[in-house]
Length: 207
Image (cartoon, rainbow, N blue to C red; front, side):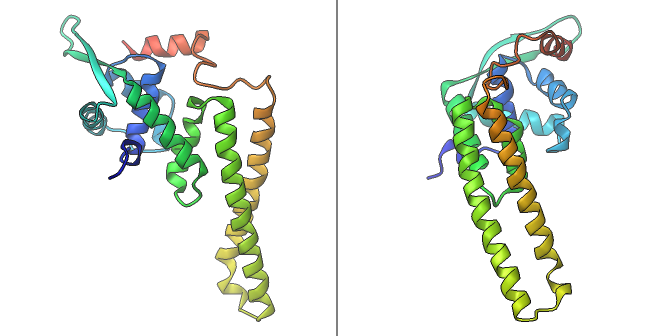
């Protein structure tokens, strides 16, 4: 049987991550995701979000904590993150940060990696780096072997591109890990929540 975090969708992960910031209603979630340009990573529609919220509630990863209504506005149900929801968020992030075969999910995981504590994030990224280094070495060996066998260059161009991309990601990961090792680099789920910019963003999304 799959664990709860194995069944999480990218949208579900982003909802859980939002609720880790504090209780909120779906309307605020949508506005925050759009304001933060999360639509670069996945398609955001009201219908998909509300469906995701319902699924997460049925799975007991989030829970309803209140219903409010102001003036002529529709009722807004506020949700909170459950302990199970927080645990499954962390489990999904750890899994996808270390995996090198699901690039779209990795982008979501990287965008939400600050929900892991510094040491946890570094450990996951080091595992990823080792896997990428192995994949890059295998690809380089394969290209060298192909050229020694006089395989036509035109059929190798995609492999060449992949080798360049892997090398670039390894260099970027090394840079990120170096920054994470420095205590001066803010990190973690509570690193920015009290800044004026963050508080203003939350307030605007609630209107």
